[in-house]
Image 1: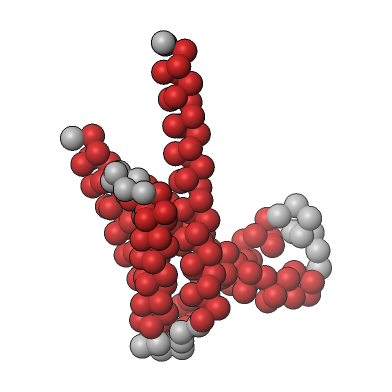
Image 2: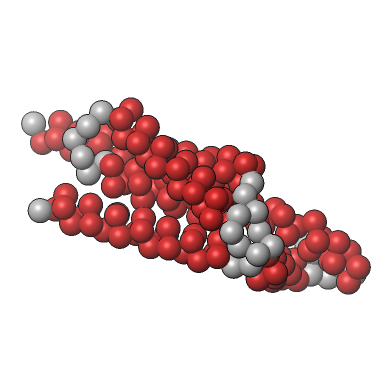
Length: 164
């Protein structure tokens, strides 16, 4: 029962993340660019080391920082994808390598289909670099879950050994 509940939870979170990604990818080039620009402006205008710089210097930082913010957004949201896929896979009794492979493959396939979807959106296009960044995010998420599971197993085993 507990496993089924966890499966539903992680699958729901994964689907919700896919919906968020799909919605971001559905934004046209202007909408997407303005969102990245807005976030970059907030960072540059709030960060203590940059907020007091000249307007011209901040404008340059915003222009050059947009791409970094954009790519970090890709990495971050796909890290969530990796976390939710691997957490879902960990509710099954299969080998870790199998869980890892399936999780990475599902993340890669979604990243590819997401970029393909963008080819139909005005002002957007597919990018192999984004697929690589997305897949790296999935990989990071998988590793995070593997570390968490490993720590919990180690702690659980120590408690069992101490009881005996």
